[in-house]
Image 1 (cartoon, rainbow, N blue to C red):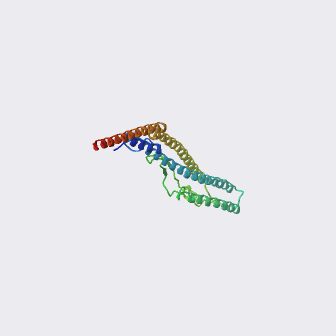
Image 2 (image 1 turned 120 degrees about the vertical axis):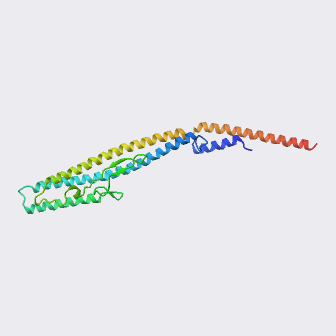
Image 3 (image 1 turned 135 degrees about the horizontal axis):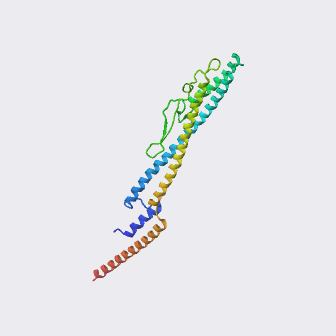
Length: 253
């Protein structure tokens, strides 16, 4: 025989132990469906936030490398101006070129060696990087440029002969544009991260209001259910005892 009070008590025990009001669809089918939808959206926002953190890391690495390249180009421009001075002869210009060559080598190395997760960020070998910041997989792009010496138009740059200072200015503009683009992407990613984390928290709060159990109320109901179950069990025992007694009385006649 199934005792309703005992069944209800066991169900309440499980809910109290888990702290959840909804454990199966039978508890609240509509609430469970809404909660699952909220959970899916929350998980998408959380994954997006994680992706954004990686994207910000890649953007920061890129910007740091661009800053180094910018400094090198500024120094090359200073040396180029010095080499254009008519007071310097070939020997002096050769000495200046040695430093220029070192700086150009550093720029090329930075362009080919700057990586995030084994992806090169500055040599033009990869397409724009899209960071999946949204639950639907869309997101924010980080522009990828070719900032090698070839991409900057500085292959074979030499101050010992005729040279175009405008080539340095054009290269510096490319670096400045790349830094501006990267900075804009970083700002957008940081904004998206703040949105995702805030929205995820709000969804968690909404799920909690739907799923979580009112513990004091549940404990009170559990105690009432237990008392009712104990009472019914006692009445059942009493009835069985009475039935047994009657059977014995009539059986002995």
